[in-house]
Length: 427
Image 1 (tube, rainbow, N blue to C red):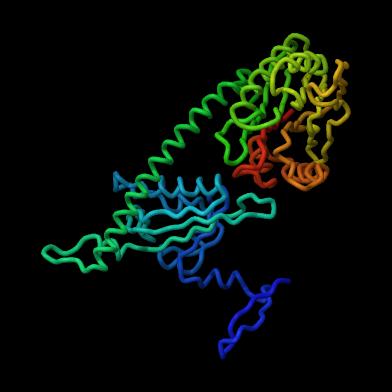
Image 2 (tube, rainbow, N blue to C red):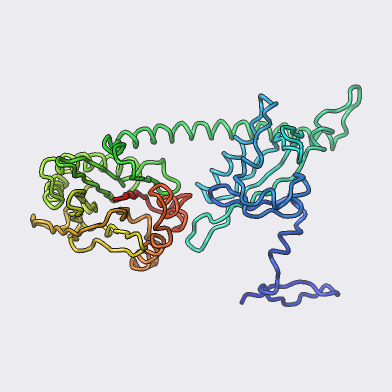
C-alpha cells in the first residue's frame, strides 16, 4: 500500500494511506466537468459538474455513444464540434498521449426540448487511462465551458476599447484558433497518408471469395502507431467440391516492408492451395518460395481446408499459434497436432505435418495472429487461456459480434503493440 503526504492543521505534512481515499467520490465532486469514455466512445461515467453544465442527468448519459448524446447542431451549417472532438479522441487512442484542444464551438441539445440547441464554446483536454497491459482502457474528457468568456470578450461593444488584459485574452484566443486550424491541416495530411496506406493494404488483402461466406467475420488491426499496414494477413479461397481454404499468416516486422513481403507470400499460398488442395503440400511449396524472398524467413502461417460435406477440417501449421474450434457449449479444441517450424527455419526441406478433425454444424472456427493474445513478459499459455475463456464466454454470438467481443475482451480494440489478423467462421 502506497502512502502520501497531506498537511495537518498547522501545515505539517502527515501520512495518509492512498487506499483510504474514495476516488469515486473525488471524481463526482471535481469542479471541472469530466466524462469517462470507453475505447469505443461510450459514456461510462460523468461527474456532477458535467451534468450541471450540459443540463443532462447521469441516467440520460451513461451507456450512450458520445456523439449520439451530443450531436452537431443541425441548424448550424458550419458545425464542426463532432469532427474536431472525434479527431482528438482517435488521436488519443492511437498515440496513448493526452490531447489538448483549442477552444471550439460545440452547441449542445437543450434538455427536454427536442431539436433545440444552445450555443456553447469549450476548452477541452482528452487524457488516456492505460490498463495493466499498456492499452487505453478509458479516456477522461474534461471540458471547460468558455461560452461566457467568448461571447463577452470575443465581441467587444462598439466604440469601446479593450483593456490590456482583455486584449491579451482575445489575442490568445485568436492564436489558439489558428493553432487549431494548423492542427486540423496536419491531421488531414496524416489522414491522407494513412488512407494511401489503407488503400495499398486493402488491395493486397482483397479476398474475392470472402463475400460468398456470409457467416465469416475478418478483422485486421495494425500495431498502434503504424501507418495502417503490416505483415499479417488472412485469406479465404474456394476449392472444388464445395470445399474451401482459410489461412492466416504473420511476416516478421511491421510497416511497408513487411506488408510487401506479406503480399508476395499471401499470393503464393493462394495459388499453391488452389493447385494442390492439401494444406501441408501448399505450405511445402510456400516454404520453398520463401527461401528466395528477402524478409520472408521466420514467417508463420497456418492453412486449413474445410470440407462441409464430410464436416472435417484438415490443417497444417508453419510455426503459427493453434487455431481454435469452438463448440456451441463453449468448449474449445486447439488445433495443435500438425505444427512445424516457421518458413525457412530448416536448412533442408522436410515434408510438413498435416492433421484433421471433425466438427459439428454450428461450431465456430477461429484463426488469428499472435498480436491478439501475446503480451510482453507473459507466457503464451496464459494468452491462449485468455482467448479460450473469451470464446467460451461469447460462444453464442454471431461471427461479427464474436470478433468484436474478442477484441474488446482481450483489450486490443484500440490497437495493440503487435499487428492482428483474425478470422471467425461459423461452420
